[in-house]
Amino acid sequence: MDTLRSGFQKSLDSLRQDILKMGSLVEDNVARAVESLARQDLKLAEMVFKVEEDIDRLELEIEETCIRLIATQQPMAKDLRRISTAFKLITDLERMADYAVDIARITRRIGDEPLIKPLIDLPRMALLVQKMMKDSLDAYVREDQTLAKSLKEADDEVDNLHKQVFRELLLLMMENPRTINQATYLLFVNRALERIADHATNIAERVIYLVSGTRVELND
Image (cartoon, rainbow, N blue to C red):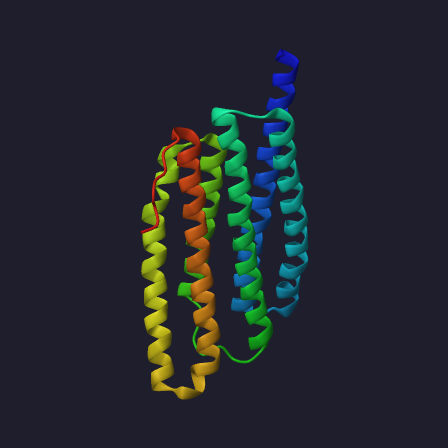
């Protein structure tokens, strides 16, 4: 029995490490996508698409591991919550990765045309979002409810920036109709970053459920 339990624990530890690896790839790809836009670097944008393939492969591997552990170990209580949390985490991470790809696609579409305004608030949002991603994964590894709950305040900050960027771009389009095309693309980027932050809060909510068995809403 002890040997079986030890083997199961090693599998859970390995699962956690794979999720961290996936999270790190996603976090880096979000940063890469935003940087490709700010620098109008098409080669960097193409790298986002290549890394996305690695993320998709890892997601499938983690999913298969979760299914195998449930089928062979029949986990109960918190162990079952650990595996179900892993299932849900990779869904949130995969959606974050999709938004990074969306941003890279916008870099492709804008190409090397002059930016209608310096990108200041969008990279600032991206840094906040990356910190949220890191904190949510740290909370998962450490099973830290306090850190998980702190993401609510960070999400509020991202939401405020999102509204600010939206207003600025809308005003720009009203003042100069020639900016509408590119401003619309930047609005998509603004929305993508806000959604990534929402997925980070989803992860934090799942951490709280993992630890306490209680469901909490952090994203109003």
